[in-house]
Amino acid sequence: MPYKPKERQFLEGKAAELRGKPGVLEGSVLRVEALADVLGLELLPKAGLKDEFGIEAYLAGRKNTIVVDRDAMDFGSPRYFFTLAEEIAHHVIHVDDRSKVTLQTCVLDLSQHDYELLEWDAKYLAGAMLMPVEEFEAIFRKSVQKEKEALGNAGDRETITRYAIRKCYQAFGVSFHAAVIRAQALGLIDSRMKANLEKYLRH
Image (cartoon, rainbow, N blue to C red; front, top):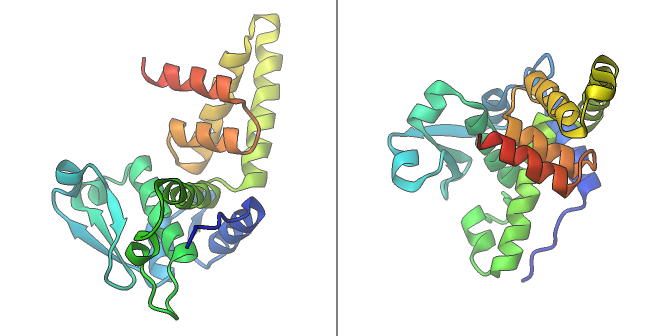
């Protein structure tokens, strides 16, 4: 059966609902492991997961279990927390406890295109959970305005945008890359600016 992508409005609403759970926020930062605990998800550390398979977490076939790389869990990088948020997103929108559907059975018969749509939905929800739309947009726009005023005619668009992205990733405890993706998803930057910013990441 083809995968039916979720509406963005639905995903934003689900993100707001999850951020509203008790004890999961520290200021504006989502405590992703705390959210997993609130949702009744067990985090099962596994040594060498990243080294062997190149991933930091995955939703296991065992009910309510996310396997995580032990070192990634111990060091708690922004990338790890985004990956964990993505697996929580899969659990929330793709696993049906009532019919015993697991993520593995959900993707079994999907085409490559439908699988990519499913992954996109999980990534979008993870980004929305970590970077709520109204707060993100407000910080981004305020930072752009502030940097324009500070630099005047000397400020080029990419420098100003990079400053705004930096303020966003600092506010929400995510990576520069995650903030860039979120900014594009919300229409704050276009694909060309996204590509320019990602080139900057490689320098």
